[in-house]
Amino acid sequence: MSEPDLCYWESELPCLAIRDMKLGIWKGFVAIDDSHPFHGKTVEELFKLPGILHVFHAVYGGLCGVGHLLVPKYKEFAKNHWWIGIETSHGEDLMPLLKLDTSDPNMAKMTSNQTYKDLRFIRREINKLARVVSNYKCQ
Image (cartoon, rainbow, N blue to C red):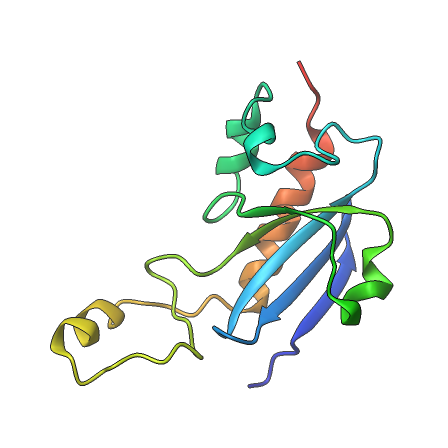
């Protein structure tokens, strides 16, 4: 409850962390402009580029999405950037706002090992993503 729901900063590239209000998880994004080889490409197209697996595996959970920020409340950050994102909604991740039947013993067992990935965590991963994306060169 002490974390903000949005955090913008710049490292090698513009970075943005947004809390998903349906699940309570963090999503993180790195912005690139049209001079970058990833600009305008779908995730499927990215996977055809040489050396992309290094980028994909450099961050927690791998890349989960690309595109423009279309949500009006983020328009001050959107500009004309193409955003590359990750999220913290994987098997071992606690999703605080997800409604689960904890009376089910199987569900309780499954969720007992989950951990919450906080803002500090997503910032560290987004900084890693910014570093590898900014250093990427098509071979």
